[in-house]
Length: 138
Image (cartoon, rainbow, N blue to C red):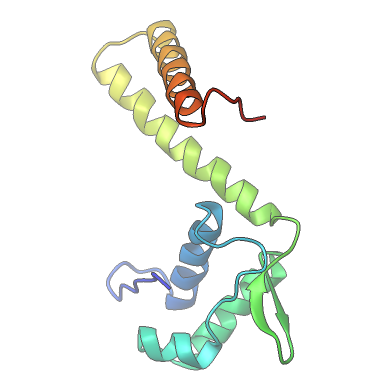
């Protein structure tokens, strides 16, 4: 698991774990049914108290992102997590904000930016269509 803890950013460690697992789910690095490391194992990897990891897992379970079953361990929730969808939207909104700020600094009007995005989307679709043998993904 690719979680990095920072003791200097002011965010509680359990919240850092929650945020990073949310991101991993939203980014598709974890799919429905994938197992998360046991609490003790993740605590050892991160060099934190097991209670900290347990608290993060409780938060994630309360949000519907993960499911813990006795004897089966902790897995990513079925049917896609509403948390994952919301996190994807948040990530994209952050990136859009950065793009809009850069466009504004470069004095690129919104209409021009939208046209550029449409051109780039068409180019990407053509490229992915060629890679998949001309078949469209639906």
